[in-house]
Amino acid sequence: MTLAGRPPAAALVFRTLLVHGPLTRAELGRRTGLSPGAVTKVAAPLLADGWIAELGRPAGERGSGRPATPMTVRAERARFVGVKVTGDELIGVLTDLTAAPLATGRAPLASRDVDSVVRAIARLVARLRSQGGAAAQAGAESPGGVHGIGVTLAGDIDAQAGTVQFSPFLDWRQVPLARLVEAAAGVPAVVENDVRALTVAEQWFGAGAGLSSFALVTVGAGIGCGIAVEGRVVSGAYGVAGEAGHLPVGGDRVCTCGNTGCVEAVAATHAITEQARQATGDPDLTMAAAVRRAHAGDPAVREVFARAGRALGLAMASVANLVGPQRIIISGEGVASYDLFADAVRAAFRAQAFGAAAECDLVVRPLPFEAWARGGAAVAAQRIFAP
Ligand SMILES: [Zn+2]
Image (cartoon, rainbow, N blue to C red):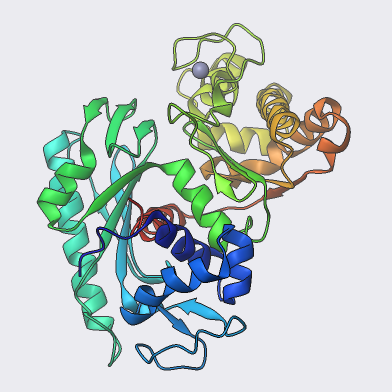
């Protein structure tokens, strides 16, 4: 079924129901700013096509149209695949329309060459599709069918154009990834920055659900930040909103971006490893070994983690001072050793957050890469009616 030609209001109503539903027509009107008449007009074809249903009424049956009858999206109406691309692996998840996972899978990347990554994505999508088909319950609609693919990866992503502008760890520039994946998999595809996609997922069904403003800071190979302001995950005019990893916090360490003194130059995994090597004089020290030494009480290595924590705390305070979020969610693979950062993060945050901005709570949330992949599916699901 073609979705083209639907008015932008359909995307708004559908996305609002996805993220906040079930909602009555009156609540939908309040949240979208549409008049009750406009909501009814937009909802009618969505009800007729089975994308949404009135609670307590079989799909496809003519709706009552009463303003007080809650409407909800029909999870079984469509399926999506989310894929997170890392430097050496793909992580995929097949979901229903509400981004609830139906099957997951991982695939190693033999090469970072664009063609081979695109082919690997298409193979993973096919595998998840057949797994999902086998697992389909009787009565599910088009069990093998997938409506859309959401590919997410770190870097400068033009989500509107579906282009990877720059991915440092894949060494890609100007790659029209959405178009390539679409051609290889035969399914419409969208591309999004991985942290922003995770922010969309957290807003929808994670620690950001129900909050009008929150931020997500990820700590790991890079320092990422997604920001939701008044109900919307922001992208910025140039697609790089929320680059908290490149806020300047001083020091003379050179960042991967080429500048000096960025948060990422102090607090990313490779930066911590490098500083721990300098502090211990052991040129072969790994991150895991640095964590062990810090846990064993090595003061020089503990200071490296504390310095990273201070940089992260300053960055989070800057985000809080600028945006005023209710909550900052801290995630990423780095939170596995968050106990080594925690005190310094909180102290720097409290010292630098201005006035009531300090009331923002900091929540640590370990999320596996499957949750990041689910963010890709969430982005794809939220965009289906978007122009
Ligand atoms: Zn930088």
